[in-house]
Length: 431
Image (cartoon, rainbow, N blue to C red; front, side, top):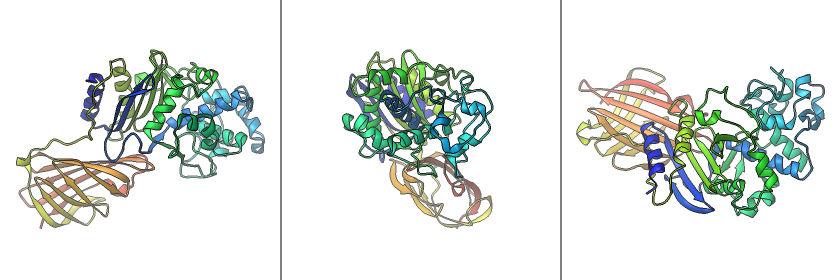
C-alpha cells in the first residue's frame, strides 16, 4: 500500500484541498496513476506557474543551440523599447531565470494591455542579481524572447526538441497575453501524464534533454528564503524551478499544480489540485508532498473529492421557491429541492444537482466540476464544488433550514477568476 501518499490525500481532504489527479513514476514506470472524474491522467489541466519551468527549458535549449547567451542583457533583444533605466539595461537573461530581476513584483496589469512593454517601462526598485523577487512578467518576457528568436510559438519550438520525442503534447496549449505571446509565466494547459514524461526528461530518466540543459535548469542560482511561503519553497531556486532540498526539484503552480523530480532516485510525481479554499493551501500541499516522497511506492491510492460529513437523520426536506428576506448580494428568489438523498439548487442561474451518497459530475459556467454534499448537522446542508477550465475554481455552500420556515444560505466562491455571483449570503422565507 502506498501509505505515505494515502496519508497525503487524507491530510489534504482534512484541509479541504481538492486533489484532481496524482501520478508517480520511478525509473520511467508508472507506479501511481489516479484521478477524480472529470479529471485524470490524460485530461488537460491549467498548470499556472509550472509554465515558468517549461519556458526556462525553452530558453536553455536556445542557449544550447547558440542562439542566445545567458549573460545577454535582455534589453538588447528588444531594441524597440528604446532607452531603459540603467538597472534594466544591466538585467541579464540569467537574472530573470533566477528571479533576481530588478522589479519588486509583476509589472503588468492582468486585465490591461502592454504586458511585454511594462517590464521595460515600470521603474525598477533594486539592482538586478541582488534580491529574489518572484516576477511573472519576467517569465512573460522570456517567453516573448523564445518566440522572437525561434520565429514560432513556444510549443512549436519545443515539439521537435522535447514533446514529440517524449510522445506527448498533442493536447498541450498555452494561453496568450494581449500581444498574442504565449503566457510563459502562467498559461500552460497540459495533461498530468504529459507533465510526468517531461519530469522524467528533466531527471534524465528519458534521454531527451541535453545534460547541460538539465544541469543548468536545476543548478542552485538564488536564495528565496525571504519569501513568506511554505518551507519547501524557501530552500533554493534554480532557473525558474524550485529546489526544495534533498536533491529534488519542483515546478510549482497556483492552486497546487506540482511537478516534482529527484534525479538520484529517478522519481517523478505530478499533482493537479485546487487549494483555493485554504489560505496558503498550495504551499501546504507542497510541504505535504515533499514530506511523503521518501516512502516506498506500490499498490493503489484511493483518490476522491473532498466530501462533507453526512448524517441522513439531520436532513430537513424542503421544496419550492423561496423569497429573499434579507441578504448581501443574494438572488431575490431561490428554488430548492432538498431531502436526505440530495436534491437541486439554483445557483448563479444554474440548476446545481447533488447527491449525498456519491459525487456528481457536471458542467458549470466555471468549468467541468464535481459536486459533493452532506447534511453535516441538524438542518445544515453543506455542498462542495470543485471545477476546472481555463482556471480552477471552488464553491462552498451552506444551507441552514430552521423550524421557523427560514432558509439561510451562504455561498463562497474561490479561484483566480471566479465571478462575484458565486459569493453571497441571504435568508429566505420558505414556501
